[in-house]
Amino acid sequence: MSPARGAACGKVILLGEHAVVHGTPAIASGIEHGAEATAEPSTDGRSTLLLGAAEHIAGDTGGDLCRAFGALLAELPGTPPLRVTAESRLLPGGGLGSSAALAVSIARAVRAFDGGVHAIDDARILAAASAWERVFHGNPSGIDTTAAALGGCFLYTRAEGASPLALRRDVWLAIGSTGTSGSTRLMVESVARLFERKPDVKDQTLPAITALVRNAALALEAGDLQGLGRLMVLNQMLLAGLLVSTEDLERMCNLARDAGALGAKLTGAGGGGSMIALLDAHDEDQAERAAARVLGAWRSAGYDGLLARIS
Ligand code: MEV
Image 1 (cartoon, helix red, strand yellow):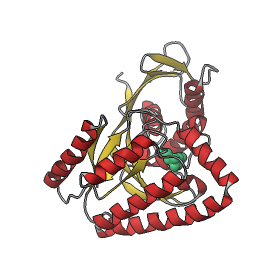
Image 2 (tube, helix red, strand yellow):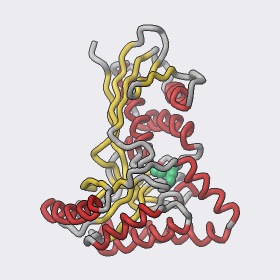
Image 3 (cartoon, protein in one colour):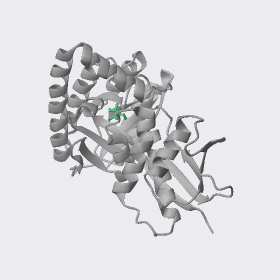
Image 4 (tube, protein in one colour):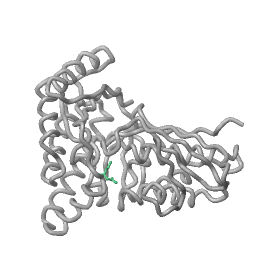
């Protein structure tokens, strides 16, 4: 019997990270790179997760991965003991939703294992992936798991979930990596503490980010790349005000804009991780030329990146 398989994509947040945790809207999109998992019968009656060289037993007290795997399986009742192998092609803590992509791919492989006895419905997969994410991130908004499960480009709020955006044209991004990782949990907690200490910062920042996100949704649907780029730059300034940007992220944003990007900002939790630069491109050829300029500038400064299409 061949193993059951599950896959999920990584994500970028185009605008609105952090604020989305506090109930405001954000825009995210799935990206091609992601995670894959397989599930097969267990030979020793226990459910185990193999990630890299390490084995994690569901529900064991051995660490967060054991607890997260146990929490995920608890949301998929009727699952027999399984041996699950998973792999992410995204840097952990890199801001591209590696943990959520792993969770969704594992939940899909587990659900696919029983050959259709249980329907593989998105709501159940999302509930299982959210249980996993809560172990690592405490108070996730759900945007990462939603992007991993659904892909595409969408507006998201905690209260209403995802509303797909109808893009006028493909959007091309250079995704840059600082080479360091940030902890989503720590960054989300530090913003929550800042809001507690300084309620005026919260009262000013959340409506401002909401306005940027709503306008960015309109810009995406109208194909207005210049407008979208300006909104990204403003969002980056507000994120820096929340103390989640870093010297590397700021430097990469400046390098990208000097190399012709229409806008640039961190993506995800910050504190390291990744950033995105909006390319001035309307087709694949232009995107490749624009990306070569931005990636070249990053590489000469010791950073790396890749080209991604949002469609
Ligand atoms: C992390 O990818 C995005 C954050 O807004 C956290 C969350 O929404 O759960 C920083």
